[in-house]
Length: 363
Image (cartoon, rainbow, N blue to C red; front, top):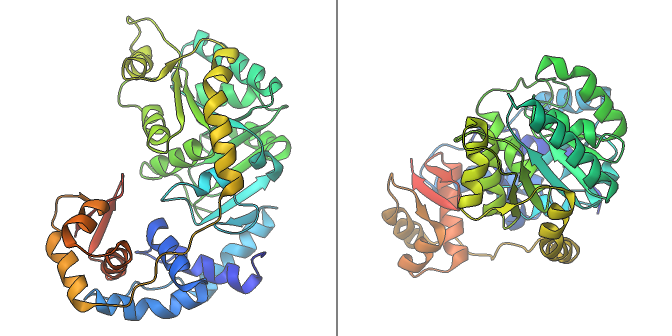
């Protein structure tokens, strides 16, 4: 069922509220069925978590955002609703709301992410552009992050066959500034995707969030050139955690920009040198992810009534050190639904921190 104007307004009020992240948003929607019902339930859930409820985004703030998105010629895609990219929806922390501008049909096609160094070598830039063009001719959409270097080369190579640019800020922001013309071309010939509200300028904390979208939209991620501890390696790690293929182009050990790729290969990433290598590597996982996308139907969270003793048991197991949610279920002896409800109450009360890998800690 398509999202109504009222539902969209409520979805945005929910996710734009401070203290409500993708995981708590998803659990609220699954538990209460609609954003409106979730909003009504939040004060009681936060009270049970022994904290203050998050202050919801104002109606005026949301109305202004919707107007700005419409002025941009963009539109919203909402998690769990028609049009939302199926592979991205598989992530536990999938963005609840995306802003997109351009050809949304690209989201239904096979895709590979290409990332790499901003200060890439001339040879790597040329290779990335040619690889993207070759993969595009084979029917693959190229996903990247609109950064300097490898990202820009990948977008250029796939502009006429299909490319998706994921923006770290809002849909109306350009970063880096020299990519303004490139971003305009992608909006016309490809697709732009943003998670942040319009007007948001990208900061360091936004880029890991953007990277998970890049990895989540594709069946595999290819790293062309990357230094150790670079953002490209974060994208590769997120792809691996999501069960996607990770590929890397080997390089000279004398070049620091190749050490990240060589390290990925040493740790188990697939060594590739051309488009055919990439397609061969993606083959099995592409078919598996296609089946996942076709079969996906959001499963409602298991229902559980509030049990004060259950909540106290979960809280007693938590501390400042992150622990797996599955471990809490095992040690508490409670059902998954009871543990998730207790965590949701603590989260909405501002007393829980969520970490990568489905880990949580007490704030």
